[in-house]
Length: 83
Length: 390
Image (cartoon, rainbow over all chains, first blue to last red; front, side, top):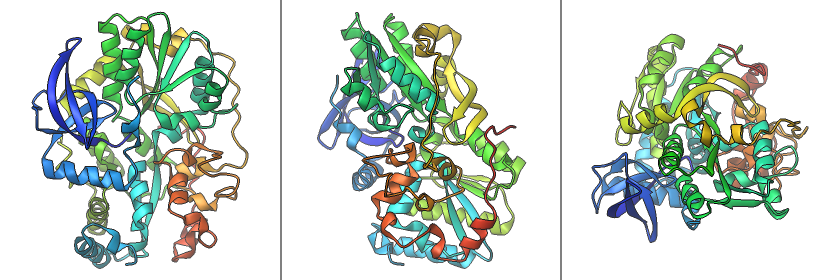
């Protein structure tokens, strides 16, 4: 919950007047708020804290951080299904 | 260098460890602020590849661990109401309150749900207009933007059935309190990388300057931590006390300005009680008056809270860096991740859970067997008072 998880933006859309994106976390896809990274485009990688993107990362950094979090068993929160 | 092979880049790790060893001339005590950093340090044995003069002290940077018992009990009371859908991050469900945990509330019929994001709880409120959806908004500055966005969105969508039970905590007042505590022995900090992604580095400058402590913004991977330690030691040895940001690939000096504006709009700073530590003035966020219609603490008045902590648990001393997890007689015995007595055994970011996960409860005896630090530790317990005053 405290550590951001990198994911790849697949598409962007507006929902209830808020910028959102469909983000892929190595196979798990989630709706993520992109309101604070408006520069993010499909194909970009973003650092996501509990459904909210805080920064844009390059692909290499995103891959490394994701692999590290996997090794640390810190990806459990992604398995929680939407309500 | 037993654990160095496990790093993805063993050569770089060895070089950094060597540089640290060459830089050190005397003992230094360094606190890593963030629970995620503690987890990495214990998993990779980073504390054990450092020269014996350097002691890493685990900081109270785990929001699950420091959420006050009163707040946990308040959450239980609210979650037990038949008209409430209580939503939380998964870690909070197993945190022991005075009378059990949220999982027990759920097993007794409470509608308690784990959500991935506070924004999911907002959607739940929209889907169930006749239920009162409450989200347990805990965390450091990293979860403040998503929690603030949830409240902001709920107000914009006129979801009057959505509220948040806010128990946010802040890093800078916490490290200031540690530095002001009588007998403090922390001489430098590895700053919290992802917190600074949001807030930037600026608020650490006055602390470094006023208390003459190096603060090095540090990431969470083994090499990040070793580099953080190296930069910290180099400053200490040179008599410098600066904020340094070797984690620039993730942290900009100004943080994320849009997130900071949103936080400022929704939250205001308040005094906050930390579990095991006590009240730290101006160390938390609460909702601004303008958002009072979404404030669960106001909506659901819970007055009759009588807290009860386990008499065995020493998590308060662990959180303050006074003791290591395996100094606790209950560690790995009465207290395990399956039957936690204190919050530090629940969260993956809690020091006790990290020590347990990586087998340190199976090792011989007490924490300080590896080097002469033991004597130093036992002599200089940090007598942080129940209320840490500025």
